[in-house]
Image (tube, rainbow, N blue to C red; front, side, top):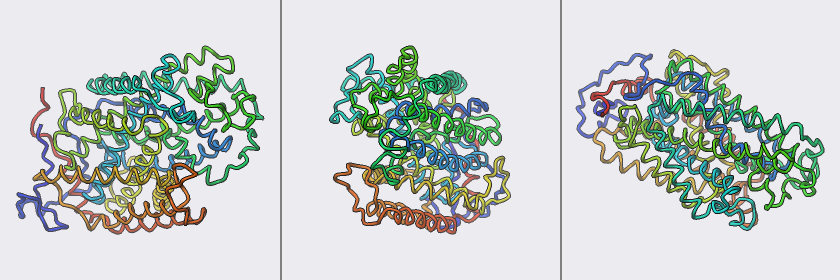
Length: 583
């Protein structure tokens, strides 16, 4: 398949055409404000329920299996505060994505909105954040399967690999089985989207039903006194700083991730202007309700004899520490529920890993449409599957298995990459409101002039709470991504010109967040040997992040692409395929 994105046309802002450009061709191109990008080769076969389930199956993954335990172990009953705060934050971010997805329903949307709003430099950055986030989720879901599966097959996981902390590693056998499981994700993704949607919908109905069943059953094993175990609702020694750190560190934000999956599959959703906003908002509301209630019943149903020293004192050898909800069900005499939950411990991560493998391939497709990745990533087979992008997603996922051999060790990196990706959405929304205010918006975010900068600040606070140890590792991944994309684009004669002026704020933003994290209060690593300096006092550091975020937000909006150039970028992706899909 040959895709013509018209990047040979001159670019009015820089005045420097890409290689082989004709400086006269298309220079007077006029684009109607209603022009929308179109994806070529993909097939619109997903309805409203399928779109909701695409996001929901990502939200209800391994996070529900582990998040409640790690949150309670970190801050006791105050974990409820974490889930509510994170839920409100993610709902605001979801509202942003609902408007963007309705405006421009293109596959790999999170990788493409900044491209339209700010041009290639910002598009490259946030596009790579999107791809990095998606490609790391399938491995983490595989780790979850191995940890729960070790109840029956002890050789899959070693709970004492990290000194009996309850966050052990997969074994060599578990590693091999993880690779096989990722290969299965990839194989299923080669099905036509209609068949894939049926498989995913069946899995998601199960994934939603089991947590709801768990909430109902465990509610009958309730001990109200558990909510003050360890010295009160907020246990002794737990600070507000600890509560904030638990939001990313205990996997709470990670658990909420995935509401944007409908955006990533937008090129394959029927009536996307109507169905996309409904799917995103519906999925996050369902997910938030489930997670808050799960934390309530986890705290209330835990046997009181395990809580003499609070939730942090639960022994690492306890079934709860190895397989939280299944272990809890067994301890309270619900053996049949424990069996169901161990089955679900395969089904839930399987469904999430499956759909993230799908979205990774679509983000790669979107980056190729932006001409950041090689055009091979945009090739689709007869079923409308971007096959090359799918294979690379599998291979790249394997690399993340090596340095991060457990669920807990990979959570912070995935959270950081995800929230960096989310940060591009409110910036894009603010730019679009000024560039194309008259463009039809099936869903219009209320009070966007206020909520959009707040959403950007929220994203940056979550990144900051992840800790400097996570941020510097993420920085290395970003640098590698820039190098690879630079190499890809160097060999593309139709690559887009680099929009430095409209992305002048970006290096200040990325480097600034790194410096604030380095000087701030959140390490993200070993408390006894923090990698940050703690020079900015707690409280002031939150204000610094918030003010810095607002400065970057309004700077970025001021530097946005002019309306005509933004519309030209959209128009360049509204063409049709020259050749039919390969058979």
